[in-house]
Length: 187
Length: 155
Ligand SMILES: [Zn+2]
Image (cartoon, rainbow over all chains, first blue to last red; front, side):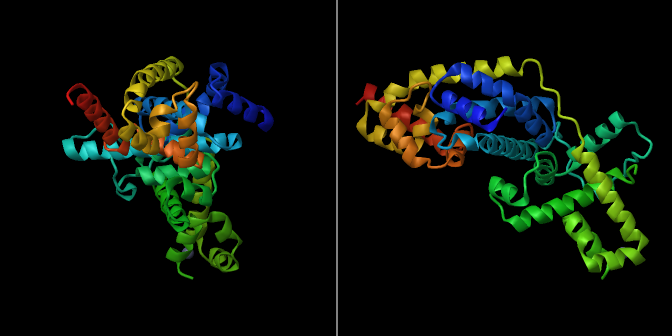
């Protein structure tokens, strides 16, 4: 969708046009769900989060000043909703002292690496996804935003409300963890 | 340069590290660090080519049902607040966007409040997102709203 067309659509939706809002939903459903699913570790959590994101977008749209900022606003809202979900789950699992469906936050170095050398493409993707889910939420977040959403380190820092240096060091440690979890990848 | 330092640099910023002359010099003489660089390159490439997750079939219906529910709730909750001037001023100041900018047509007064309060969409979305959190300021406003209603019934 060309930028001008998207801007017009956002303006119409902002003015209360339900059909325009539905078109926005169609356009970004996959992007929002995909981001939530990658940030979180279960389909159910991602579905709940995506729903919350759209509710926030629907309610916030009337006060969106710059329609051209819609896409980054969407990503930022999704990141914040998912961050909140993670923190809540962490509290809950600490409180109830039972293991939920969250990925255990173990040091990947303690675990045997998955050797994905000889795996087919689909299996390799599955191994990489599983490795991402073994990262801590903070590490997964920066990897997803940088390597899958294509955000720069500065944009990620703004989105998360942390220093640029923090983003850089999290990214470094996250990539090193991933490399250890995955073992020698096929060349 | 020590291996540990080289490998940290590689993980932190593969591209920049590989462009650095000092790192290149180290890599030329160190097979372990060369292997680590190759491993990191492969990991990043594998992450970046992950396919998009499949959207669940019922997401759209669930989302629009939730929006319809919120729209109704906003219509019901709105006017009660505004009947009491003291609370109305507070509410308009703090929770304008979260509670009253219920689309499609928020009242002009609230649009002005919302506009001046949340000058950036990020601030607005943050306020909205925090409406879902049980301990956010919106929860306090809910409690105050209930109090206002009770006072109205039993002055
Ligand atoms: Zn070395």
